[in-house]
Image 1 (cartoon, rainbow, N blue to C red):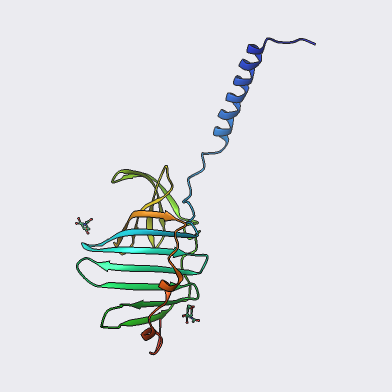
Image 2 (tube, helix red, strand yellow; image 1 turned 90 degrees about the horizontal axis):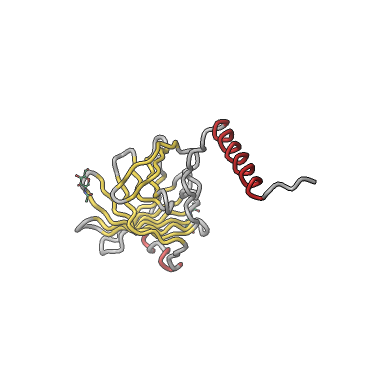
Amino acid sequence: MISAPIHVLIVIFLVLSAGGQISAAGDKPETEPVPAAWPEQFHALLLMNKSGSLEVVDLWYDWINGRNFNIIQKQLGELSYDLEWNNGTSFYYTLDASKSCRTVHFEVGILRPNWLDGANYLGQRRVNKFLCNVWEKVDFLWYYEDVITKRPVQWIFYTGREAHVMTFEVGAVLEDEKWQAPVYCFNKEEKNSE
Ligand SMILES: *[C@@H]1O[C@H](CO)[C@@H](O)[C@H](O)[C@H]1NC(C)=O
Ligand SMILES: *[C@@H]1O[C@H](CO)[C@@H](O)[C@H](O)[C@H]1NC(C)=O
């Protein structure tokens, strides 16, 4: 048996593996990045801007329990609650003296963790301090995700409303008792959406 010196074997190996990489790259284009699925539970603070109307939204996404909560503070204005259940029922209410509550039934429930599947990749863009991959979910929004951490940085709805993600706590869950709509949501007639 001929035994080649080890450095010759290493050179042959490197040449073969380099050749393999080149042909693999030539055969098929590099696959486009896809957005990370949303964690099944997270808490985020969002700064919303709709043509200069600012809101801070305290978002509690809880797919495991089939619920999603937006606690919305308008700048120097109303604090309101948008509590959405996966059965399609949403409650919009305030907890102040006005005791207002509106119940809406949607055909579909809350966003699924993979709701970004099928979004069109548009490339990379620098947003504020973050290099982001950008996708478009047609008829809905543009989604910007940090290239390195894969966390969402912002999304912009077709309506012009912008959501800027200020904090993103994976696994954080709001206590059950906070998910209770007030009693005045349950003793009035309900409306259907659309
Ligand atoms: C909000 O958006 C408007 C444009 O619609 C812009 O002029 C303004 O600077 C934005 N404000 C903040 C705090 O981002
Ligand atoms: C959906 O679930 C919520 C929370 O359990 C409940 O209050 C609401 O009545 C349900 N809606 C329907 C249509 O069953």
